[in-house]
Image (tube, rainbow, N blue to C red):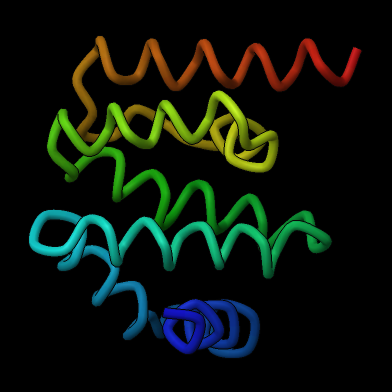
Length: 119
């Protein structure tokens, strides 16, 4: 999983527009959501000190994942967000894309919580 995360970071940093690793993450979002989410968590950790890459990771793989994963798995992601400030910060850069209104409202709630924690 870490290799896929590193590939995504490298592709995004050095080869804009080339996202072979991102294609895997999107495919795994429905077929292997556990693997996809682990890769996304690794990407968030690898990019947290680079503002631009962190935003790209949130507005890219995380946003796609939240649009594609099942409701049951989204619930698990929200449970992780309860204890993971990095994930809540990433939610600040996620757009609705293909998410249901209800799911996106939850993302926004965690995003606001992350914003409030900064204050």
